[in-house]
Image 1 (cartoon, rainbow, N blue to C red):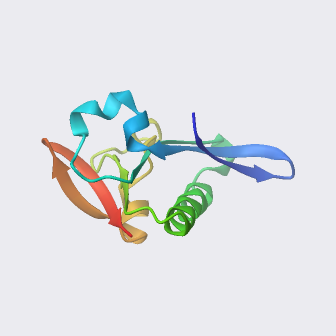
Image 2: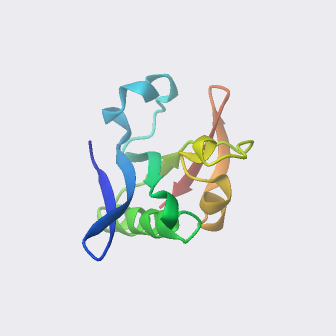
Length: 116
């Protein structure tokens, strides 16, 4: 697994699973001709740290590093219909929208993308 950890005073408070899209076999049906794509598959934020911007800070770090590493595209799979914390494990759609991601469809699945 690859990803990012968020810490507060040496304690892990959040995790973002992110990596090269080809490394996620579960995304096989969503493969596209684009190369150099990073996929964000989930966030796990400790309950007492939710709704405090931890996931968004992790997302912003993913974006910063992707740009620095000359990546072309970041992709994620949030649910626009989710109304629960569990349903937002991909990260809330509004967070991606706020950070410049655009909604698209890949084989009838909603995907958000940020072209770098």
